[in-house]
Image (tube, rainbow, N blue to C red; front, side, top):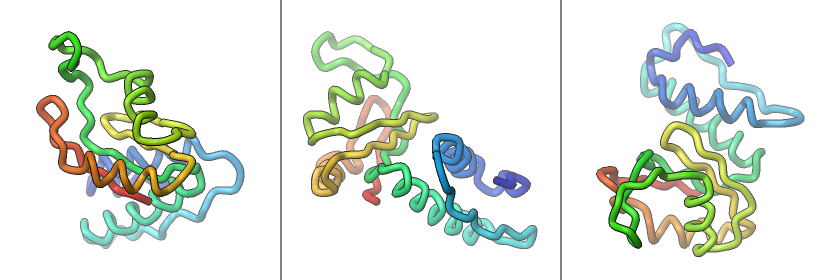
Length: 138
């Protein structure tokens, strides 16, 4: 995807480019981006494109602002937040099909959308380490 407007929202642009790299088969047409776009229009266009890519890749929830390190409930020490830890944690919310981790963002594909919706209801705006995590159901 053309990243000439990346300066308007670098984090979102990088997330979309990462999803594009993980997408196999026919990819949806990226949004038309103009040099005269405002920050808000650019963000809206990319968020809509990100949602289409998530659906295409069978993800149904996005979790933002996940820290790299968090306190372990069992040992009360700081541990790295890994793929394995995330998979074990979210398996408690429902049957996880797949997980993708990228720069503090976690894409999760549950087998049932109802699991994604209930997970969103339970963890949206929850504190994890020093971060407040935000979730979005697709």
